[in-house]
Amino acid sequence: MTANELFAAELKRLEDSKTFKYETALESAQGGVVQVNGKKVVMLASNNYLGMSNHPVVRKAAIKGLTRFGYGLASVRFLTGTQTIHLELEKKISKFLKTEDTILFSSSFAANVAFFSAITNEKLGYETYKDVIYSDRLNHASIIDGQRLCKAEVVDRKIYNHADMADLERQLEEDKGKDYRIRMIATDGVFSMEGDLAPLPRIVELAKRYGAVVFIDDAHGIGVCGKTGRGTAEHFGVLGQIDFIVGTLGKAIGGAAGGFISGSREMVTYMRQKGRPYIFSNSLPPSIVCGTMAAFDLLQKDKSIVRRLHDNTAYFRAEIVKLGFRIIDGTHPIVPIMLGEASIAQDMSTRLLKAGVYIKGLWYPVVPKGEARLRAQISAGLTRSDIDRSLVAFKKVGKKMKVIG
Ligand SMILES: *Cc1c(COP(=O)(O)O)cnc(C)c1O
Image (cartoon, rainbow, N blue to C red; front, side):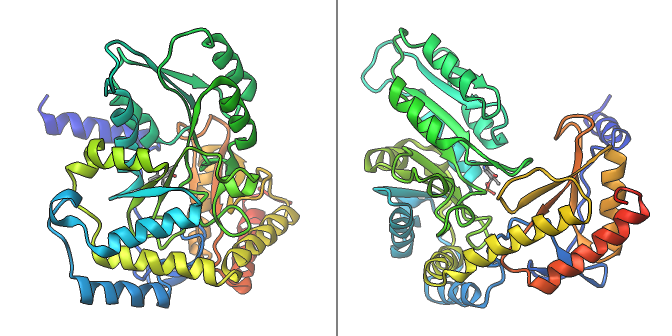
């Protein structure tokens, strides 16, 4: 077979197994309400948790950044790609997360790809050594791919069952006597399929007991969790006790692009020297840097934004349950509406779009068989009447499909 024939065969397999990912094009900016197929629909499927992706203040700052600092840098950071605004944004994030320093990346995927290999593949004065990383089974693809770049002969990559602290403790205990150079626990802050939070207090406690450092990727946590949006660590009261925090600028905080790692001054300075996606890939464009700064400022100045996100989430969770739908309990704006069969989730998301709600379904192999679901993502950018409009559609479609009584 030719390469193209191979591709075609695989694409057919994806379609046959209903795992082909279709794209529905928006005809508008991202927001609480978007336009699709000429129709206004309520958006319940974006990571635009704070409603900042088209916020006038963020837009204005981005335009100002573009005008003053130009369109692009045409360089990586250490050549000619660092402007004062990049340093300013890094400082702002450190202050926000109460860390010593922060390093920007073109995405948080790139941050994760940089992080693990930069640490484990370097001898750092050791002739022979071994590191160990304990990862939650449901960690994001970018953490997995990042760790794949670690040389197998110098790092033991271990997996613990999802949020299973007994399993993590068992493995840490088992390895206690081993002569590891660095022990690291790596987890998502929030798991995007279930909307559940990593049990950080217990992780921090175990890390202390076994001499491990803690890495969290808080892509769905920063701007979302905690009273002031500082993330999963704030939610649990362990801000300041996480060694390395990865975050994205592509979700709650403006939603354009970019990512970062925040933590100790030594780690950040080291990453600037050793993080390959940082050294060999372009720096963030000024419009995004300035838009992001405005997003962080807005989040800190206007406390009502996070509050509105939390209120909207509590309201939607309560009302959707009242309608008779089964959800996974929690507090996060990711609200999985459990439907069972993949075909029901697929059918329901199509019908909901026609009824004015944009929502996406997840099914096997992304989630276990028989646990197909629609995943609602609530936003501060939704008004109460947007949410009510979506609930009316859920009721109508749910009844028609006999998912609810
Ligand atoms: C979305 C997500 C990413 C990727 O973020 P980008 O900045 O778009 O690369 C990484 N990690 C986690 C946990 C995510 O949810």
